Image (cartoon, rainbow, N blue to C red; front, side, top):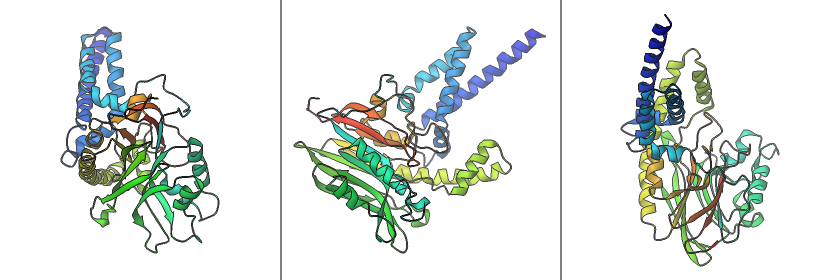
Length: 381
């Protein structure tokens, strides 16, 4: 009887290993295949973290019992090296606190979620706006890229933020693009680049898309003169899933296996499919703009996609992902849905050296910031 049980258990683990291997390799394909056509592979890519850790566990299991089956997860992990390297940074001695070093340029990327102002009564003092502004001031970046940046058109209702950054925080140069405005014009929000160094030229391009889908995002570039050198900074906010509060709640119910999960899943999958199509087109436009840059470029943004995705792979190209270059671990940047979501990035031209990077988790926005200190091309640290 024990031998029959062992044989059954082994066959079960073999089936599980083969099944997880297939799913893992398909999730790796999300790096290369067009998500607009193969949206289901892109969706498997969202589960890459789970499949990766499952593969590691299975490999250790087969090695522990000295079975040749360990070769299957081993070779699958080798095949997925590039997506794995983008997903998990391996620099255990990475800085936990960042002291700015002389000769470096500090870049900050942050989706500030409208400074938390939409969750509270205007000017009630209950939002996290002041804390966020103080946090940015303490980190003292030279260049800041922000998404969902809120700007007031009526100071009786909301504080103005562009003048505060310019006059109080000391960022006299900026480029701001309004992507969404409330129908009564009281406030708007979009993307922005603030700089302590002179901006000599700016360009804004709208991605286009049906407004019924709220696809009204854009990207901006700013040519910045830093210590006599020209660099180009691009920031963007790629198409989100546009989940409502109810849909976030549905995700939690699906995770718990609550009644009606199948019906709720269909609506959520549909949003994934639409968003993938938009982001694919947006990523290709950004890649074209970057490849045409006459200066070394830095890309900052909320891509709304994971590191093993087509969008990440397309925009990054041969550029350095600062987290992969100097960080350690997953580098989570989104506080909801899953503890493995890194969807906010800083990419730098290969000519830059990444001196250090930080991914702190202040409980201020639904996104976490990414901060990197870069050494300019040809400049000694």
